[in-house]
Amino acid sequence: MGLYRYKAKKGPDKVITSVIAAGSKEEAVDKISKMGYLPVLVEVSGSSSNDNFKQQGFFAGRIKQKQITVFARQLSILLKSGVPILKALIILTNQTPNQKLKRILNSVRVQIKDGKTLSSALAFHSEVFSVLFVSLIAAGEESGTMEVALLRIAEYRKKKEQIFSDIRTALTYPILMALVGTGTIIFMLTFVMPRLLSIFTRLGQELPLPTKILISISNFLTQQWVWPVFVLGIAVIFILIKRMMATKAGKLIASHIKLRSPIFGALFLKAELAQFSRTLDLLLKSGIQLLSAIQKSIATLDNEVIKQELKKGYKSIEQGETFGATLDKCSLFPKFMVNLVSVGEESGKIEGALEELAITYEEETDEAIKIMTNLLEPLMILFMGVIVGFIIVSMLLPVFQLNLIVQ
Image 1 (cartoon, one colour):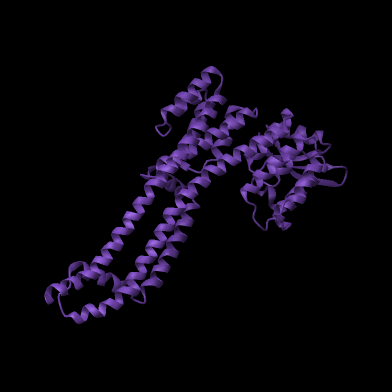
Image 2: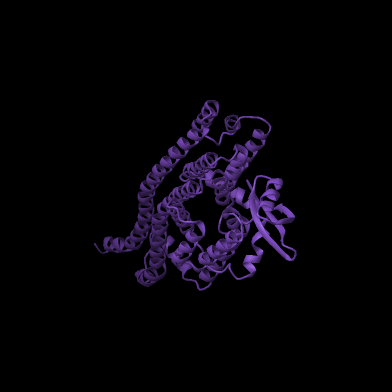
């Protein structure tokens, strides 16, 4: 199932431009004709499909991912209760507090009223509704199980959001500790240490090596040119990293670093495998063919290394190789995943195998997050404690030395 941008005539004068979900160009033409339109141009939809929408001023504001999840769940409940889709969209439009989402839902309702399907109306707003979202809706429309498709989307998105929320939560505390600890150390070196420096100077004695090192660092940090240069350097590095991450090579380097990092590598891998397995399972259960489902599942991943390996596998499957055999060629994928997919293919129950994989890797991701959190907290405390302890000892050593001389 793909997205096709089309231009069609409605009557002798009116020309309609929109997007429709279909398995092929011929199917798209057929769907457009059944809506009572005369197709003039049909082509694969690109990023320009929502240009008109942006020009109309609808692009202002921001829609949270959680709001799209809530929309899918609530629409599923309303449709399951027998509420017509147009009335359901009116209810949801009135309920949402987000003005941008409200305008989008109004636009979707108007397009459906004009004879379009929900999937084609949502596809017009591709900056909000992903290809995966639209494809699942289109599959639900074809099978007559729209409310089931929407519920599956909501559950899938909720699990995905939960995984990444847990990762963010796990990283928040160590990052906060690092910032507070760094701020405390800088305060001691730039505010406390210079005031003690005059006392040490008046002592007129040879200072211990740790104290000399601390004084040198303090003198360096209190120079007027240091902080502007530091801030400028951080800004330049941030801009360079941001530009690099916008390139394919930059994303690939960042993906390699993520997977090879000693603490976070296993966590990132399990999170990506859980998402891929869950997405592929959802697409297959919705009636989408394996090749198309794999292609759409790859697009939902963030890690470029994993995406490249799966794209290679996709080409091998096109040539007749089994999915399990393609995964087995890459050392990146665990043997557990390879074996379970292979068994699922042989038994004709690959959806069940993928669901089991998704559950397993989601649980392992949760466990890895807990282990990482429990490990990082004491490590951060120890690291900061060592630095602060060194500063305190370096400041007290001259005092101890003076006491020994007096005695």
